[in-house]
Length: 413
Picture 1: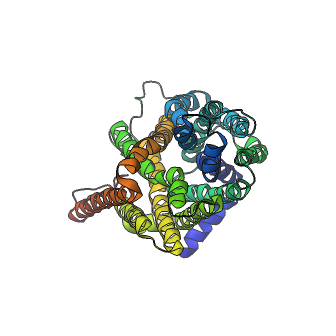
Picture 2: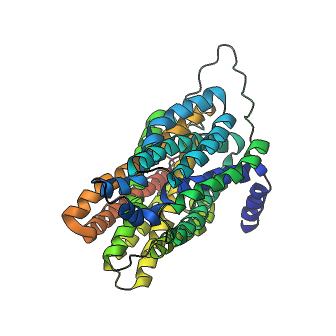
Picture 3: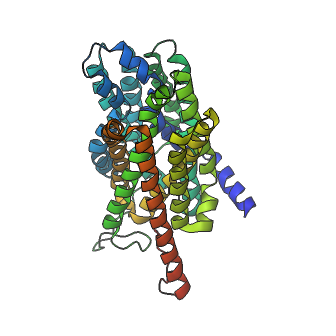
């Protein structure tokens, strides 16, 4: 089994299309969280703005609003006109909009540039998700969804750690990091091509299912809602952790960068093991382990009296999130028919960023009402409940298979 896993991963690393898609995946974390270490400095820089406190916090999830609105439309465009053009155009727009914060004069215009950045992310992520489904299937697709999360996390480690160091010099400098995406364009241009479309047979009925998934639209909608809630919870970290650390006497952006770096490293490492864990425990077990780890991390945050406990809490949250995230992509691609993979990718992408955008809008008032301990303890309780539901769902699926009531394995089992 280990030899098969190694052979599968080596095959993916030898495929330039997989490398290009992993490069595109790394831009996801860069889009939002890269400027997290600079938030307190930006708030001080634009302190004359009466809305500086809220606008500064919204700079991180601002792209999420545009993604949430534009991703389903991008999915329809990808299904109709192909994925390649969307991926390349999105990467160019990503560089331009991301770097704009270096020169824009005030918070409202920087906020507007972040909204444009979200349009670029919608194009990139929708095309990338659809291409994973087009190029790969079976175990290779499962392995690539895990590697995708690793690319996001290790890319986030590099980008956020770098941002933490250069934010000490100026809170504007982290915006320059978005220019690194231009280095990905040559490989994307060379190896990404739209797959040939399967010819339609005269009189054939539209394919509304995939791999026996049944009413895939309803299942996809429920999956998108769960992913939105998961990302809303996880995004408490990049939007609030710098302010929480400042309240604990760790005001340096280097500390914020280090905490978020641990978050990314732990997630990136665990995501490499995702295919093996998923095969051994099923999706129910993956969600149980993932939500359980996140609950432990949020429970530890307000109790951490020593710095190493803060890093342990961040590691648990990052590992848990990285464990559940590939399952959303794998399940969505299993559910949706080939002709609708762009739309499925758009809906899934939209749900990620709806959760991210809503995160500070919900968490900030909760902090004002209950403080950071109340927010973190309540979040831990919610995640523990989600883990319990996952355990029940996994046990029910296992019992159905054991009793023969489920002759074919469901994509959600």
